[in-house]
Image (tube, rainbow, N blue to C red):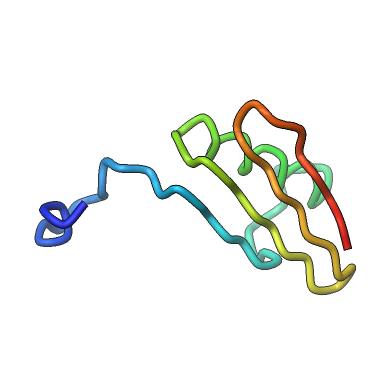
Length: 75
């Protein structure tokens, strides 16, 4: 990844892990937060990210999603 850091472009290598904490995204085109989270998570996994971790501070829950595995929501 080091050679890409000198360029002013998107890095073509997906991260291994993405951590999301809540969201302030525009949810107007979604029926609910869950729909947005599921779509964004699937998009990240489809792009090559190995693991997506969502931390929801209001409900004190954590969701962990990995490619080809069950997604888990836990306290």
